[in-house]
Length: 350
Ligand SMILES: Nc1ncnc2c1ncn2[C@@H]1O[C@H](COP(=O)(O)OP(=O)(O)OP(=O)(O)O)[C@@H](O)[C@H]1O
Ligand SMILES: [Mg+2]
Image 1 (tube, helix red, strand yellow):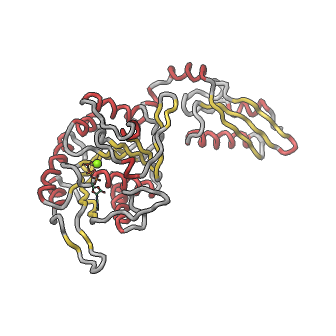
Image 2 (tube, helix red, strand yellow):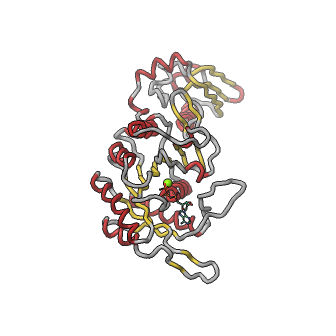
């Protein structure tokens, strides 16, 4: 027969996912109710944070265990642990999980999108590659690491701002991608006037104070060139991989090679080169015109001993008034398809 004690016994040693203490230790099992005639049990469980993926996992575990001692149906409600309990255990378990992204056992793959010079399409590529990976079911984060020249929020049509919960920033979810950008923390498009050291700090907060949850890939849209931020990323993320964006013009490729050289010097593996604005294709005749020259991507890839992951023609995304994301190509758009091919290659190589 189903009893309250049996339920307590079977649940007590489950670990709370954030504090890593058992539900028993935390006194986190409250309000057990049993309806014998229906063979139904309901419980209320306290966790450090509600509404998370971790909670879902815990829920499955709790339901299975209660069923294993005889319940046919299980009702479960979650609520947050009282502040004093949280405070007590938060100190006890500081490093483990919360260091998250930068901890050595984290499995997230970091990929920085770099270029030698501005305006070649790094941000466009970052945004669309992130969305393409998400469309393939990957858990993806995107850091707009262009602290001064942030553009990702506008490109993705993000109107929301991140929520701050306790001391953690919850990134904005857009098209399946978790996004963080300096643009979220600036009033009315005001210019950023910080100096060097603040930049590094900002980047650091993006890693350590943002609640990323579990991620397969974290993409970083870097500012153009080989400046401070790029260097900070290289030093902060020794295992970061890189994608270099260039236009097809040979001089562009030459400049991009510098970004590549920086990656190599800091021992960042280069995943490949993306050639953007490769050609213009006439809708009428289908003819390709190589308006910015030809061969830059290929040349750069040779020089960096890597491959060209894809070539993107000149074309704007289709307008979508219902769900405005001005720089994101739809999945069935010609460029959307090229991005999904690139995403597949990235999944294979990284
Ligand atoms: N394939 C393309 N076809 C048409 N327009 C494009 C394409 N790629 C990028 N653009 C446009 O070119 C401009 C520059 O692109 P983007 O902002 O992505 O470059 P960036 O390298 O991130 O620039 P910055 O160095 O300023 O950060 C944008 O207006 C973008 O919409
Ligand atoms: Mg940019």
